[in-house]
Length: 180
Image (cartoon, rainbow, N blue to C red):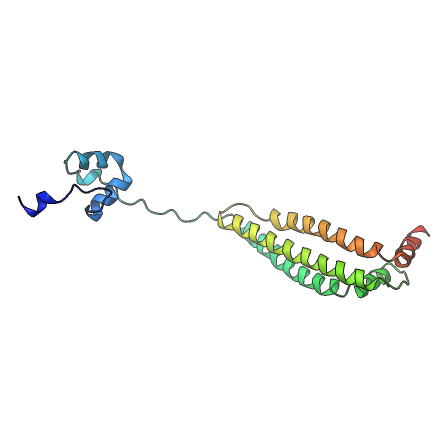
């Protein structure tokens, strides 16, 4: 007996040449031919299919999406810095409305201002991640920052409303301005 006869029959490609491994992976009929002991014809061995380039969406969509994300980032940073000083934020809002009122529920304002800031930060990060994912897949993505803005603003608006209603004197001053 020669040394080759004593070897066990190869399984799972452990003794197969790289060409045989590629042929078995890509084409089941080549695998059957190799198991039958017939060498596959060179034209039957498929070459590796070229990898298609990743699909990209329209240029206008990508530009609009990136502009919206940059604008959103600037807006979120600005809003977070204002909300972290919630009493000042509330008083500036009252001045814009033409009301002379002082916000006095300081602890509640700072807590809910911080909560609203976290909501804005998480909302932006989630929106940016979902947008990036759509862009990488080559799908239209300009609408994701718009929907993210609306959803985040609604949730943060609830937090701001809770903080504003914590000060009854400030709230009555605001509602009194609208009643007249």
